Length: 118
Image (tube, rainbow, N blue to C red; front, side, top):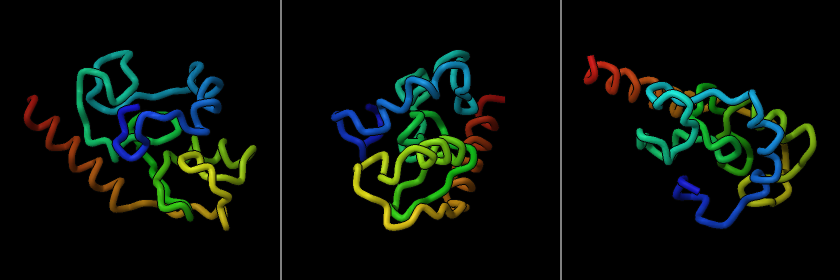
């Protein structure tokens, strides 16, 4: 896996990904067409990628486990699980909070990337 904090061992989310990846995935802005992971041509910061989808986040939210996820993927995860997709630990609560700082960092990063490539 490309995210540094996930290591090389599969996560619980890997099993969950099969259904989600079929036709519902979107790519990171600036990724080459059809390439949907951090291992694609562009090497964006690993923290910009959702641990569930391995895609760049557009609407990141943070959970009680301290990890950020793309909202739509963690909502689907929580419909069937009460554990962290990263650690497998039971979540004491499933409230989601927008991660404004991460969303702003992603937006600012892509503004800079696009301005360099004009």
